[in-house]
Amino acid sequence: MERSELVELLSPGGLRLLDSLPPYDAAADVVRAVSELRKAGHSPDLVTAVLSQSRLRARAVPKFGEFAGRMLFTEAGLEQATRLRVAALHAGRFAGASLNRVVDLGCGIGGDAMALAAMDLTVTGVDADEVTATVASYNLAPFENASVLHSSAEDVDLAGFDAAWLDPARRTAGHSNTSRLTRPEDYSPHLDFVFGLSERMPVGVKLGPGHDRELIPAEAESQWVSVDGKLVEMGLWFGALARAGIRRSALLLGRTGIHELTAPHDSTDAPVGVLGDYLYEPDGAIIRARLIGDLARSLDASMLSEGIAYLTSETLQRTPFATAFRVLEVLPVDEKKLRLALQERRIGTLEIKKRGVDVDPATLRTRLKLKGPESATLVLTRAVGHRVSLLVERIPPLD
Image 1 (cartoon, helix red, strand yellow):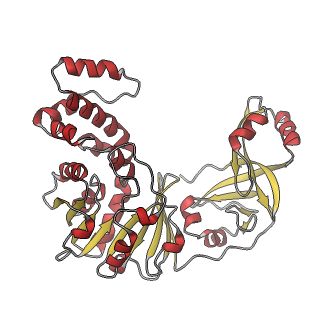
Image 2: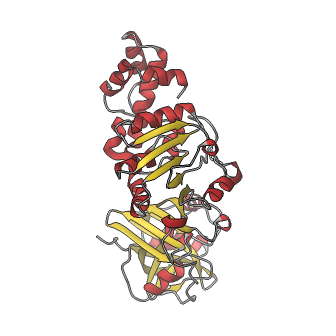
Image 3: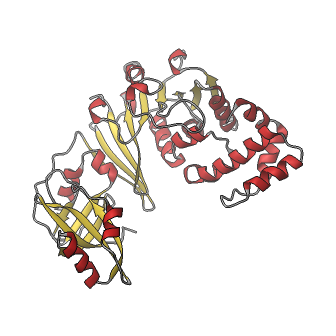
């Protein structure tokens, strides 16, 4: 969103027009909508701004729920924004540690700052981009205990704050058509600043779930978060925000509630065992936190093969931390024989999962020439170091 568009949008007439639009429909005729709004006398900048915001509000519903319809967004800001459900857990850390005055350095559109303010904490959001800071100010306007500064994180006077929250920008500068930054040294603010700040005050940091584990400070509590089976972030917590005795954590948020597995360090892998009647695929948060061994021991399970994140056991134990499958058959590894085996079973719809083998599931699915009314799941992996093809049946998750 350009500054001129934002100025038009924030006018009383602009906000009224935005709120008057029907719910966004991706299949709608955008050209006709633009034409009708222009005929009504609205400026090009305002028409562009309100239609863009209508689309972004619709996209924001999975992250912000009913609040999305009352917020403003930028493309890049929405992309990096924390889901409100996760932001509430972030805010709970600060509230639980009685850290009442929080500075959000790099607040983006203000998602985390909203959650902090909703917990009755006094929060100051900071963003170096003028448009983003203005959007955050709008989103935080309902909270008397929240404010926003247009400033770089490094230039803020931190005197008077109890703690800091940081979500370093991990995309190139701009409000739309940005790309993901792959090098931590390119983040803004720089991680050297972030980790240096943790030596002065309690700090929480949101990073991507694939962040290099070698760069995690030893004193930090590292928490990987999964929402409905999707790995969404890694949080680092320092000082009073870190829990005693915990350095690794996998937090799962799903329809059955909140589940967490914690440890004082990476867990040692369980021994490799023979293929049993059941196969477990750990949640991504468990894998990233390197708690597969602890999960295996809790299930009385073995590793299917060294270095591969599948577990196996003779008996089923239900767990929120892994998807369970019943092993139906061991099928041939040879592609021609595998195709014949699937044809014999009249399998026309096939989910292909793989770990530890160099296979492109989409390409293989085409080559298998599937036909028939049956559906199935095929796991391509290694068992005790050897390639295997497993026909499995997904066990329904815990209610």
